[in-house]
Length: 116
Image (cartoon, rainbow, N blue to C red):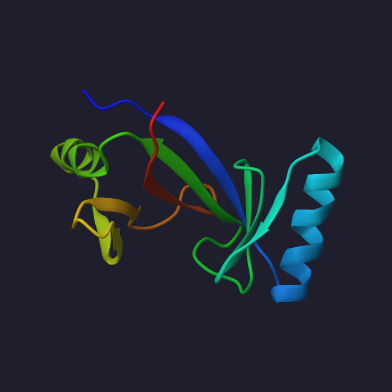
């Protein structure tokens, strides 16, 4: 049986400037480091703010699991489906992230590789 944890909450920023301001606010509130990436800005590991609106009307929820491929297979066996176009792989070919199809309460949900 796969193990899961909350990896992060993703918010849809209006644009890169909005994303940075939002992440900086969370950083200031909770003393979290802010890291600007290519498509998003993180406040610690807890909050990801997308530079442009992405999946999920309200944003997304990242669910961490040590083995994304095994967790995906387990959820597929339960009847859940995935958006294969969102799959991201590590340099060694290991599946590292993928979104489930659809939304839950306005949030897209994705599995992401995370050791815990």
